[in-house]
Image (tube, rainbow over all chains, first blue to last red; front, side, top):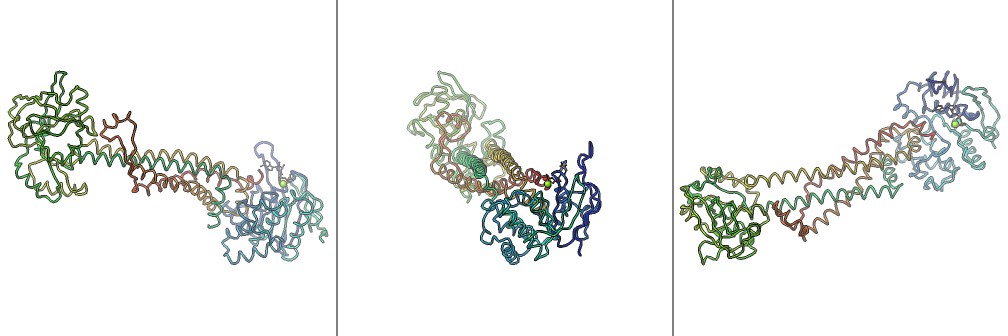
Amino acid sequence: METIIDAHNISKIYNKESIPVYAINQVHLHIEKGEFTALVGPSGSGKTTLLNLIGGLDRADEGSISINGEEITQMSSGDLIDFRLKNIGFVFQSYNLIPVLTAKENVEFIMQLQGINEKDRIERVKLLFKQIGLEDKMDYRPSQLSGGQQQRVAVARALASRPQFVLADEPTANLDSASANNLLDIMWKLNQEEHITFIFSTHDQRVIDRAKRVITLVDGRIVSDTNQVPINH
Amino acid sequence: MLVIISMAWRNIWRNKARSFVIMFSVALGIFAGLMVMALYKGMMRDRIKALIYQETGHLQLHNPSFKNDYEVKFTIDNLANVNNLLTQNRHVKKFTLRSIAQGMLATTNGSAGLQINGIDPASENNCSELNKKIIIGQVFSNQKKYEIIIGQKLSKKMKISLGDKVVLTFTDHTDEIVSGAFRVVGIMQTSNSAWEERNVYVQRNELNELLGLPNGAHEIAVILNSNEELPVAMMDLKSKMKSVLLEDWKKLSPETELMVDTVDITSYIIMVIILIALAFGIINTMLMSILERTREIGMMMALGMNKLKLFVLVLMETTFLTLSGLPLGIIAAISLSNYIAENGFSFGANSEEMMRKYGFGTTIYTDFAYEKLAMTILFVVTTAFISCLYPAIRALKLNPMEALRK
Ligand SMILES: Nc1ncnc2c1ncn2[C@@H]1O[C@H](COP(=O)(O)OP(=O)(O)OP(=O)(O)O)[C@@H](O)[C@H]1O
Ligand SMILES: [Mg+2]
């Protein structure tokens, strides 16, 4: 198997001056290509922090993180922006899309930032909207889409740049269970058919049940890391 | 880049009311600035025109020593020759001779020091539109000797009316004091009340007689074909007339030249002040809009939008916001300015005195300063750029992770 994330002994410490809070405490993490991994744990356990660290949005205070063999802990913030653009797809909990752009333009935007030509962009946008089942809503503004539809567009956008992996911080937190299921179906299908790596944090047991691997965090430490047979139909 | 421009354009319409307020302010500010410029330019143009065609002419000739003390004996040398040269010069359209004495005007009510100008009525009418300035009476009747034209200001001040007799006292070319009684035949009103109070007109031959200078003249006022020919004409005449002092209207009326320069600078200063005021509005609006979009901007940075592109986005938004009002302001200013250029704009009767004191007519005709339009647009673009800097820095400083947590 191919390792895409290799985090070694990473820590993130808040309040260093007074009483230090270890949001992430000496964590080792290996993610291989094609994983479908859930990050779980109680509120405040460090899920968002860990995702931000491996996504290059936040800097670790200790340890090293390499993505596809490239060390990101020493990168300048400008290089990190470029690195994120090229290598990582993001799906946030809410407020994912740029409101003034249509669904299609939101997806295209990432490719425009990457400098991909128009012909390739249009082709890819078509394919992605087919995969998320929103071909008929491509020209809608985010405000005209439901929360679930917006998250599906966000998944399409995350994939637009053909990233190494997709990080999703509680992507279903604001969705009803039908929409959440639908989103997971799409993610699962992409994982199965295109070997897209997904790492998502969640509180929702039904979402946890659909992961192939479940990593549990408590107080910034990994307390369990298990593979399971996902319930995906 | 195109997507960023299109995003910027859509972003400014997210809060329509706010954007409209800014655009309207910009339009109003530009309009006001351009109107001030047009007003100033029109006023200056008319002031210079009045100065040249009603007062000094394009240039004047004097004996080089005359202006030191205005001594009567310093008449223009070789008058016949000078006269000839002027008649033949191709730049010169017309000219008029004057004799000048500094003296005193006395009536039963009192006396005033002033300049007595001896003129040839026909050529004076021609060169300084004297006949048009007479509001009561006429130029000279030529039926009687010793007639005088005085200014309205002086007539009011000293309660002199048409037909009254006044006594002029001055020194002749041998420094002897002479005096003569003159009858007022005309009262003139000029656009310069200060001048009007200190000058009277009599016939040149009569003044010359009293001065004992049969054919002399102290001053020649020259009107050229156009103001553009002034520098060439000056050079040309200077080379041919060694013993006369040649001065153009700028030299003759340094206060007018100073005023032109000052007004030029003033109109720029007014523009800059207007733009500074606008800049604060723009900065405020852009800051608000950045603050409202903290999460959105954080999200774009997280996704991989680099700082340059983010800066361009903020810059474009500011530019659109600023420049949108610009055409409206320009069009409104050109329209109103053209209207006033045709129909004039009258300051009420109250300000008439004040305007005339400084040599301005009471009706102002604007002259749109097209030559300053490019500069104005450049100023506005610069304002947009400067105004975007602070909001842009605030946007660039956002930490995507923290912005997303909000
Ligand atoms: N900017 C910060 N300053 C101080 N402490 C912080 C900061 N951000 C996070 N923390 C702390 O770090 C710890 C981990 O937070 P994190 O947001 O990663 O938890 P989480 O597992 O994502 O929680 P949730 O399930 O509520 O989203 C918490 O104790 C939190 O209070
Ligand atoms: Mg979280």
